[in-house]
Length: 244
Image (cartoon, rainbow, N blue to C red; front, side, top):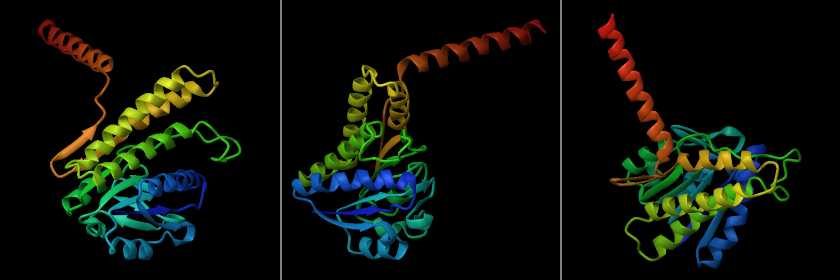
């Protein structure tokens, strides 16, 4: 099996994403996955379409995202719903970007994509003053979660798992939980903010395949509080109508 790595690196956020994916590549190779990479200025639509036409087993695509699109070098739109996402027909995809789980992921699956894992909200992490992912610790737990997703996806495909996107999303959720627990006991002064955004990213994670949607289960306490609040509001307004 082989993996396509798409690593734009033209400003601060994509610099971190590209770093994560460069760190991922030797781990994939250790598993026996052959890799092809597009880096920096090569991350343009024409090059991505050329590589997707070769039908990699897994496409791991970084960049800025919106609900319906993914952008590459200099923010060029390289993948868009109902434009060229049919190129992922038969391909497993991981989109390391903001928001594509809202629409683009579903569009990919509707065009015959083998599976999708990505995020349906903004992907958020802490960037240090030096903007140097090689020396800063605060983005590392998110990187580790993304690595867990990619490695679990590759392993599931290798063993013939019928639901590799589900396995990958579940592995990502488990890794987020592990990192949240670890950073909850950290003495780093940035730890509370790290934990806050890890929780945010965890609940933005979504895995899709034909007939499948995998997300982290919402926390019970906020649900109970919301239900109690709704019941109280209903009682209050019902009482008000009767009293009026």
